[in-house]
Image (tube, rainbow, N blue to C red):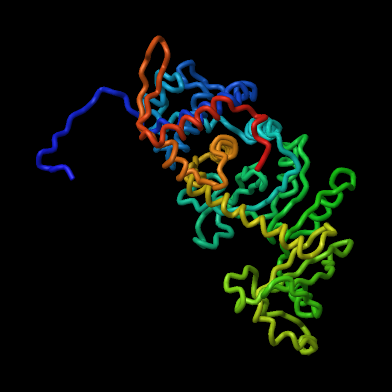
Length: 456
């Protein structure tokens, strides 16, 4: 270790960036022709000739999020990095207030048009089809009085104002097909059919092979829509059941359980709610936590009945609390075990929600204006999709690296720009062992086209 007493501090005039690896993402965006697409979607225009161009603001937001900015104030990380600005061909970069002012120009109609067009363009270019769509909602706690922030379901911070966004995930590609911000006092299935229709329109030309959702979307109106979609051709779906009293009674009275693995038993039956026109198939799963300590599912107890004597007919009641149960309603005719296995993949959507919150800080970018918040969040979701595209097409690793890991391994590379023979050269501080790997990524990004991605 150096002797700190003899250490001196000196400064350099070299404009060094800590984010030299961001050039890989810029190269991919360039080959995706993202700028050209942005110029066609009628983004809100600036009111002043001195205002920054919308495309520069969007690229600045992407750069800030990828480099670790977790709120509007942190976007100044781009402004104070002249090398990154020079990479993008900018003489000046906006401060964080310029982003906030620009997103306030977005309205509900603008959001619907802009992000509908951008998502349709993005997914239409993917050489991949037959998607599995997962639907989920999440709670974003708010500490202020922003528009739409209201008291509602908030398990971690009860009684606090929140927003309750709805998301649609393309499970096969680890991407997000749609994002709607909603007030905090809405239920999970509020406006779900409209959201589903909007999502399917954004995936125009792509086949949706399966819809999966948790018990928050358990409702006869939703099932009717899915079964009658496209003139009765329908959409396949698997939705977790809400454990109402009738579902619990179905579990109690079920006598035929088939063991499909150690500690896992499966059965199936039909169920018809009072307001449904027909019965529907239910697959039931029972897991023994003594055999499987990490068993998923719910404990079933406290069955309410106006006739307590009725419950005495079921001796199974004594063992009811021993197990954990899961129930799924479906219109598919596959074996019950296959239905259970197919639904289990939906759990990955929880990881995607954590990623957009913790890595992309989508919950921290908030404006007082509701539609401004949705617009900014939707652009961050698009930045997430491009990062996912980068993982699939450029990194192409079996490991699903999160943004923090990509930032550490690839983006956070010190470097500076020089000119030689009228050509810009980015000089990166990489050890000899690491240089070849980076050059391989650069070659892949430089030769990237949409047709390179066929799914994984």
